Amino acid sequence: MRDRLAEVLELTQQFLGDRANDDTRLAVVTQGSIADRPDPVTAAVWGLLRSAQTEHPDRILLIDVDTWSESALATAVATGEPQVAVRGAEVLAPRLTVVAPNAEDTTAPAALDPNGTVLITGASGTLGRLVARHLVTEHGVRHLLLLSRSGTAAPQDLLDTGAHITVRACDVARPATQGRRRPRPARPHHRHRPRRLRPLLLRRRRPRLRRTGQLRRRQRLPRRDTTDLGRLTRTGLAPLTTTQGLNLLDQALTTTHPALVPARLDLPT
Image (tube, rainbow, N blue to C red; front, side, top):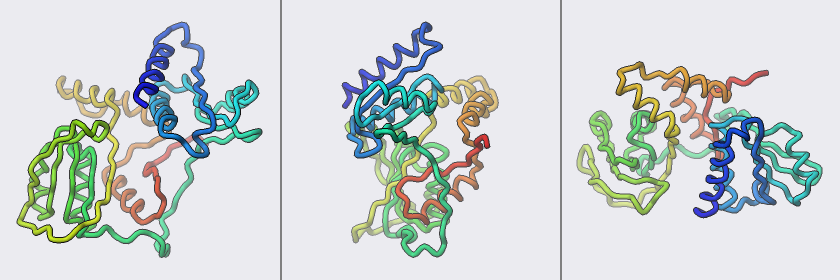
């Protein structure tokens, strides 16, 4: 998988770095993988190139076909969609649909088990800390496993809640680099029974945006970067306040859907 990803990354960088290609698009074609039963390698390639698409809009086209043909490629390109799957004469494109929480849905998952453990990645960032405290104060979670690359100790206000906090320095993308810090419970706690582990994955901002924020802090400039905000809004995503984001998290926990996008959309009608 690593070799294939490295190959695709190198080819993509070469294409994007060549000024002669400024007015052209790169079409990456896979066969019979995405819309049906994606294999891990192809799924990783699509994930890599989807990230590249956000940085370079309208420059990369992702196509999955059931049977390779020039007509299938032409059909995909003609749609104008950035990501498509061609199945015979049918063209499939990914779409988000609105999910409304249903308070009467008896199949919805039960509330978070206070005796279970919630795992949070990216836990040392602002978002991770907000979510961790929210889970403890609003959902009654008593056991948190906080993962981050730095393994930064949990903030004192979180420890003061009385929850049992375990901190680990771990890059989830590179398991071999993980280390461990001593758990820091706010008070003695006897772990005498097994607990269910529930993961909560928090995606950090892209490195480019993070470096921009670091540069602005060193220059003592306002943290809010209008360039970054403009890039976000051009994708159709509207900024979220802390309250709005945590409310969306609460709503997501009441559904049985395995993959949700808690976001405010601002799309052209």
